[in-house]
Structure formats: structure tokens, C-alpha cells
Image 1: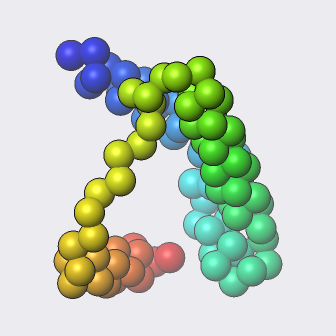
Image 2: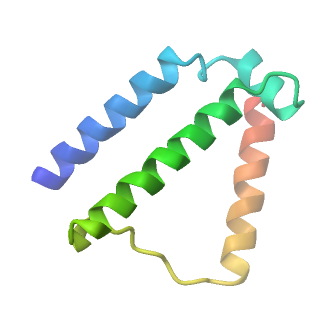
Length: 94
């Protein structure tokens, strides 16, 4: 139950930050894909840097439970998943 509540709170917080950053607007995403509006890309790189810093500090503190689990490579399944994701984005209008 704690994992479900933690995931719900984390997802709600992330959604709030995405909305406040304007990354839920079609024009912002299209501008990023066309390399005209780089705010979404800056947001993603900032999030990546903060996550890397957090994981590094957790490792230094000896908190191994926070380390991300890396899934195995499934070969063609990754390719099919990427194609399905791309088709879904195209059909959604992005």
C-alpha cells in the first residue's frame, strides 16, 4: 500500500511540475520536436541532472535501495515497443 501511495504522490507531483512548466501544451512539444522551442529539452536535461545527483548522493550515503533497477534487453521487443510508441504519438497529433 505504501508503494502505491508513493507512486501516486510522485506521479501527481511530476504531473504538476510538467503542467507548471508548460510541457502539456501541443505548441511546446511541437516546438521542441522542430528544434524551435527548447524549454522542454532544458526541463528534461535538468531533471536528468537532478536525478543523477540524487542517485550519486544516495550511493555515497549507502542507501542502495534507491538505485534504479535496469531491465534486461529484450531484442526485437524494444524495437516493436518503440514503433508502437511512435505510431501512438503520430496518431495523437504530435
